Each structure stands twice: as C-alpha cells, then as structure tokens.
Amino acid sequence: MYRRKEGNQLSFDDFFLPFGGKLSGDNRWVKLADLIPWDELEHHYASQFSKGFGAPAKPFRMALGALIIKERLQVTDEELVEQIKENPYLQFFLGLEGFQFEAPFDPSMMVYFRRRLPEKTINDCNERIVRHGKQQIAQNKQGDNDDPDDGDGSVPAALERPSQDAKAPKRHQGILLIDATCVPSDIRYPTDLSLLNEARETTEKLIDEMHKQVRDVFGHKPRTNQRQARRQFLAVAKKKRPRLSKIRKAIGQQLRHLARNLSSIDALIACGARVLAAGRHWYRKLLVISELVRQQKILYHSDTRSIQGRIVSLTQPHIRPIVRGKTRNNVEFGAKISISVSGDGFAFLDRLSWDPYNEGEDLKSQVRTFHRRHGFYPKVVCADQIYRTRSNRALCMRHGIRLSGPRLGRPKNDPDLVAAEKKIALDDQRQRNGVEGKFGQGKRRFGLGLVREKLAETSGCTIAMNLLVMNLEKLLELLFVLIAIFQGLLMVCIASKRRPTLLISSGLSLATC
Image 1 (cartoon, one colour):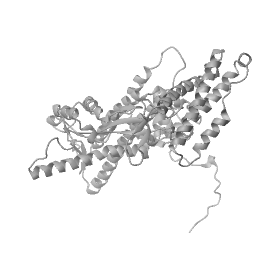
Image 2: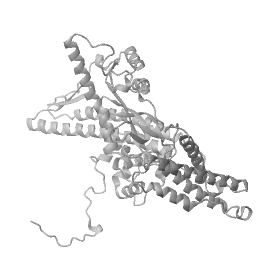
Image 3: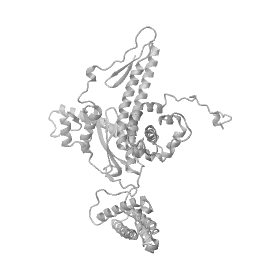
Image 4: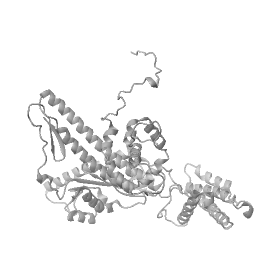
C-alpha cells in the first residue's frame, strides 16, 4: 500500500530542526570529542611554529580533527570540506564556536595538515588519546554509579574498588600481540619495460622544455627518435605473453634511447639551459630517471634480477617491492609496518619502513615500548614463527616473559605434558588472531588497503592516522557499551525498585542491582 502526499516539493525554509539550535549530547562526534585531550596535544603542536613570523596556522584541533574525520568517513579532501560545511557536529568536533556556512579551510590545506603532523607526532597522539580515553571511560563508570539520594535518608551504594594489593604495579600483566604487514600504495604494477618507456617519454618532454631556452645558441632540437621508440615499445607491450628474449631486446632498445636523451640533456645544459627553469619537478624526475637507468643497466648486463633500492615508480621513488610470499600477492609495493596490539584491543604503530626488513628484529623494541607505555612487561607475547629466534627467546626468558610457540629441543615423553603444551599453543594462536583482525579492519574498513597519498611523509601520516582512528573506534565502542549496560541496568532496577550498583573487577565492568 502506498499513500501519496501532496506538496512533496518542500522548501528548505519550512524544514523543521528538532534540536532547536542545540547539539545533542548523545551524538557520536560529541562523545568522540570528549575522548581526546585537545589541550594536552595542543601544547606539543604549537611548539613546531614560530611565535613572531609567518601567517597564523590553523589550530591543532582543526588539523587533527580534519584528519580523523577523513579517515573515519573514508572521503576525499574535497568531499571532506563539503561534509564539514553541511554538518554542525563536524564543525563542533573541529573546535568551531558556532555553525558557519563557509568552509573553515580549503581542501588543499589537508596536504599541509599531513605534513605538519608526521608519523612520530601521530603515534604520540595515539598513545595520549588511548590513555586519556581509558581514564574518561573509568570516570564515566564511576559517575554513572553516583546517583542522588532517593529521599529515604539512605546513602547511595559506593563503587567497589580494587584493594591496595590489586592496585600495586605488577611485574607482568597482559598480552602483547605483534605482527607485520605491507600497506600497498596506489601505483600501477611496475615492469622494467613500462618504467623505461615512461622515463623515455619524460626525457623527451624535458628536452622540449630545455631547448626553448637555448634555441638561438644550440640550433635544431636534438634527435630523440620518438616514433621509433614508441613502436618498439608497443610491439612487445601489446602482446599477451611475449617471450623473454623479446622483452630483453625491447629493454635494451629503450635503454639506448634513454642514454641518447640523457646525453642530449647534458649538451643542452652545457649550452646554458637550466633544468630548474623548466620547473622544480623536472629536476627531481631527472634524478630519479638517472638512478633508474643505472639500476636497469646493471640488471640488463648481469644475471641477477634484484638490486638494492629498486625503483618501481617514477612519481613515488621511495616505494620499494616488499616480498610477502602470500597466496594472493607474492610481491606488494608500499610501506612495511610493524604493529603491536595490547590485550584490551588497542593497536600501536611501532615501525614504518619503505625498505624491506626482517620483522623478527622488532620484538626487543616492542617489548621495551610496552613496558614504557604500561609500566610493566607483558606476561605473554603472541607472535608467529619468524619472531621465535634464539635471541628473542633469550630476551623473553631474561625478563620472565612467555613467548608463544613450541619450545626448542625434543618433545617430552609425558603425554599429559605434551597435550598441555599443545593446548597452550592453540590458545596462543587464537589470541594472535587479534592482530590479524586489526590488519583486516584497517585494510577493509579504513585506508590501509590502499594508500593514495603520493609523498613519503604524507603516506606515513595517513598510515599512523588509520591506527589512531581504529583506537578511537574502540574507545567509542567501549563508551557506548557502558552506556547501554547502565541504561539496561537502570530499567531493570526501576522495575524491581532497587538501587543500581556498578562493580569494577579485574578491568571488566559488571552491572548488578
């Protein structure tokens, strides 16, 4: 059944606003803003700028808040600004004093925000936000229990607290989950032939720009054989499965064309042409192309197929191939990161590198970082096989930490002991699935599946920001669960005419009447 209403063309002047000019305190952005220590983070951000020179920068809350909104909503910079213009809750989250129809900043400012908040700063903010968020949730637990006197002269039920022995710091507490993964960047799949063809086309454009500067002195433009080189490239690129001999021949042809073009650029520079006069980006590209030609010549004249610092993108020369050995993608192109996840589900970025490395070497620093964050060592470290080296085992044994996985040496003859060890290993593997879940959440729900930023510093900021937003989602989830539990408890107690009491034990919240 459908009932048609007359006058569906509603004017925006007649639209009813239910909140009457005031924001709702139950909104997710309002709750999220309370979980972030803005004043504490502002002090560190302000120290990066001069007090007497330059135009005033945007506030820290606006810069960090804009990055949080972007990663949480997964929108572009342009769409982010439009969302902020339309949503008063987002403007409150950015720290604006009132609603305004104008955009608080231009979309191009997002690049400067990412540059001013590097990976190290975001990691520090992540730790401070998690620590402050936990304190806020604990205060909300205590505040929800403090209900006023009901008039019968009785005192409200006191919040039960742990004993002094439970509050004393312990040597080992909690679980540390560690692992590494690759965060792919937004580049096309590189091949040697396609990279050389792109480099050749770039040098041809550079020759055209430089020849304009010394046309009267140099004479005719240097010969580049552009059409011939293009035909040679397409003769192999258009084939579905070209032979290796054909590919090698085409690579040699492109290398010879590039060598001629680079010699022509040197001749133009000798006549007075300047690369920087054509543009700063041309100088950067010329340096990348020179290194690419050097690497490809070594690979062309030798039997090896790998070289240190291999360039796979002319526009993003910092990206390196990361061999992962996965079924889906054997090689990925992007940054390799090592993260640690605490037992309560909060993730932290411990290392980010554009060059491949052995993640097993990070266990020592990750254990020390866990001690710095929490004041004690973990009781158990759950990691995969690559972390179970002899040096890592010795470190864990020295600090009284149990490292997951089977022990070294022959298995015991006692079948009960072997069964107990297998059960412990199975439980550790189930615990370690938490860090894999964080990778899946970051790559499917947030932006770790494909980083679209082009610079190394902005990409590092985006990767660290994704982990920060994941922790904010965890804090917001815990806060809403606490509110839902207390509201349900309150309804049950009202029905039974009893006073609610909130008990806290072993870090878990338990509501009871």
